[in-house]
Length: 494
Image (cartoon, rainbow, N blue to C red):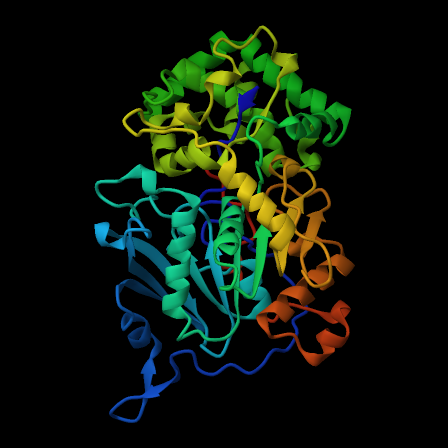
């Protein structure tokens, strides 16, 4: 069994723009929006409304890093002072980075969490574009620069992170007092779900994309079933054969990996050696293909027996990235690996087609292998994930989960409470990978999902309320804000 959990989109599933959407010609007319620069606020001495920046910076603990111009919005990069330990706030603080895409205080607000670093370029998530709202994006604690110094890693857990979000929401709610939705993709979708579990009265709705749910860390048979059944046998065999060939030709391909590492100045102290890094990358290959690619690309996979060493190496590097196991590739994501090895768990599956070819075996590549040894780690058991899963199944309200049919991370997924009073929804986008979005659903399901998001945000028109099939996004497509491509990170991470 192997713990596979390295790699995803550069900057988290959608760094700063998770849930990004593609062009859409139809736009439903929304309420008129006032000038975003001057907003309704208590009158000052001069009888004029306060500028939104003044109101934000009047919040205790909030400071400005930079404001970037963007037509139709105000975009701020901010720091907010947070307790290192919300249970004992007197024991020190750290600065947590936040971005704010401000439209107008008369609009609803989306709270976006990527689960990793936050992007410092303007972008809007799919729900933000759907509802024509403001967007607050939060960097996950312990991702630099949002890390205490020195770092007490025991304070990196899902409850502390949820409390970070709660404090930010509490600080901003008096200014943005309309409806709030939370969203995020992959680890960001997990983060949005955990936030809802611990603070269920904050948000008016949750849209969680491609969020894994590893309830029992030692029971991952769902992943073996996924890899036995995804796509066609021809495609599966072609991928497995290439993966096997990469280990059969270990000697010449490892030489290429060492040359690439030397060229890039990559080191491998954390995993132990470039040889271990090479095997780790090869083992991640098939997972990485399905996470980011599609069935349409199966014909592009090199034929194992006839492909040259260069063809195999270049293709594996494209899909799995040999630098992902280097110190330079791992260190920025130490907070994720720490959480995977203490609370979140990580998926595992078997490699019957690689029997006898692995030198270190899949059991070596567990979360501990990717975290520097000077950071203490201890698996806390399945309690945290079981608690969240139980709450989602029994108590969740107004939550939407969106998964991709061919995404391995969706093999274990959330199943929210059913029933009209719960108002929960789960959608699977046909043929989609880890970039699954509402915009990829069949027309009928897409309209129903959009109508639900508009309803939760309080901006569904009377027409949509009476006929959800007529629901459309409230904004025009913006090529810069609505990033359509999935930004790859190094390695396989949710």
